[in-house]
Image (cartoon, rainbow, N blue to C red; front, side, top):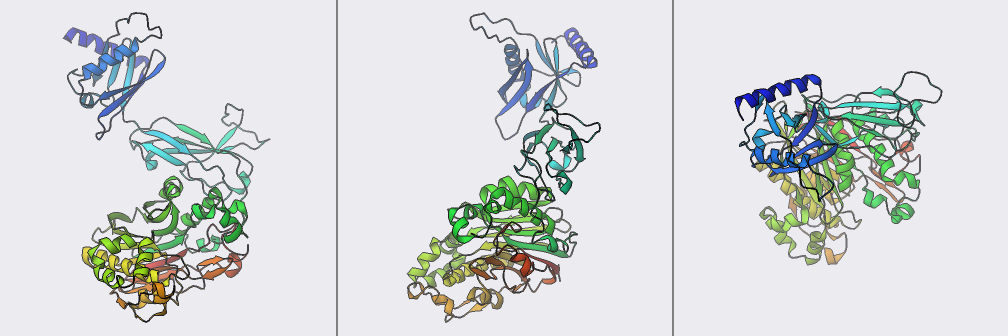
Length: 564
């Protein structure tokens, strides 16, 4: 381009810019992808061009020129396209430059007489979703899918439908409804006075420097009344504040997977006392979000977490409350384990998840146990058929990266006669945890949470606590002689049940007992506080669990642990 032409075009740019007639040309470019996209409006039509990142800019400009002259009448000869130029900081960009280099944020694209401001990777909200049901006194958090943006840098505005008869200057929707602003945080908790009114949220994505286009969404139905007092309300009184170093608040909770709650067997046999609506996913997770957020945990180990529930509900909601999460699917199942940690205090150092049966056969760490089990083919086959997993996460302190902790999470075999299998599973689990905490990360403390499906009188519990199990223990023959597998086992870990031995952590119509534990490293951690369990009256107020006031058949364990 000649110097004269360059000066003329630069002058045109200044005039158009002062006139305020600048449209947007949005360029999405991700280094890992071979193509970039250019989105803009040409002659009233939205166009999106896909171009190679390594292509010379001149070809992309020629393609934009051709797109600007397209006509619906195919028989007409194509008209010559308008001149297309790209400028950056007032200077023309070389047409020999690659697309990846040329399309910079703040550049200006001139197509004929139309000027576009180039926005490279602007903050975008691709998806904004809200629960179908919202209850008074229960927090609501939109599920977001952002690109080039972060929730912490985005703007949120909540609106409540104006009650009939109320006056005031409020924005009005297309349907004539009036709205008033009621919140400016990512999470909003409707009040009892909001029952019967609708809510909507407006999200403007941001990256800390720029804001993108706003999206808005209305909740499908009006705010509903909640169930009244819940089993966890009193417990929240003990967890109103976040813990601080050197204290760690740990929670272990079997959520009751939706794949088990939403069956005819669950409704008619397992939980016939529970109102059908209280078994529905949306209702239960409304309670779960409030319960979990109110515990203000630093470490949160969950069992029976549906894969889609983790990605679509739990992870987005808990992320809004400061927790990042990891998921481990069971073998050939739709549910698994989830470990969350408070990101202001911890960051992920490493992951060491395993499938217990697979590890037994594939990891040389368990070679001695496998050889002993070869003598008992019935028990070995049963053990290898199980889908149980062990989630092991090593976290490091954000304040002191040299201070690490090993967090383990599991859900052992459930069958009442499966005590022998649970002994084998816990032997594999403890050996793997020892390897991670004693060999890969020498000296780091251990917190081992889970649903162990074992009461305090079982061999599994005494083995974890005492570090040894005799070959004569009755649990080795828990399912008869065909699955007998007598062997002596030991482990070096010093673990104790931080929450003691509650009367029950699982309470259903035909059974109640203590099946869940938080085992803490007694050499490194002291128990600072155990959050009291719900009263028996609260647990049985609707006969058993789950109920309209409690979302699972298990009860969460919560304790504060202090570094020694």
